[in-house]
Length: 158
Image 1 (cartoon, rainbow, N blue to C red):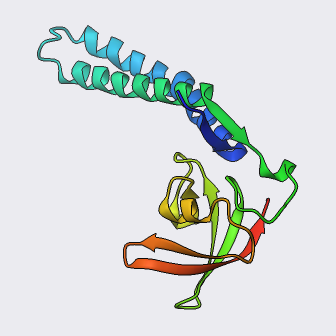
Image 2: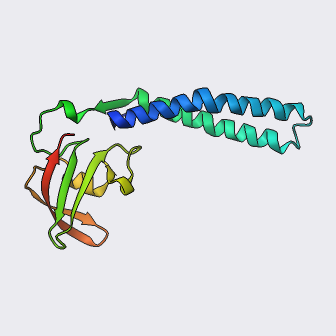
Image 3: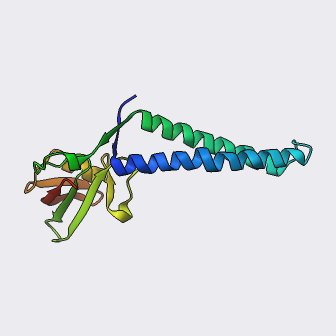
């Protein structure tokens, strides 16, 4: 399996979710299953079936997170020298040359991406177009409306 790039913050968030699933949600689900069993006939026991389904979802998420963490490559750009090059984990400010609109993104892993917080996946079209470029470069990126020209204003390793 390929390495899964992750920021330090993203890895911590996954570890926190994993702990919550294992040590809070799992016991509650087991308790719900035990209570539902006590109600008798399992064939027609909706509470039992709902609890078993929730258990399956929980266990699948635990396996997913454990797999990602075991194959993660945690990248901490704060420990790197800022060369002005756009790489995974940086915060980059770009200027749309058509509209003069400036926007700042942080390039993160797939699980961390949240466009509302300007966290974009390293696999997104914008990030793929920026990675490897340097501060001051102009770059054309394919967007739904066609190719858009951007200038890379700043690259921060924060």
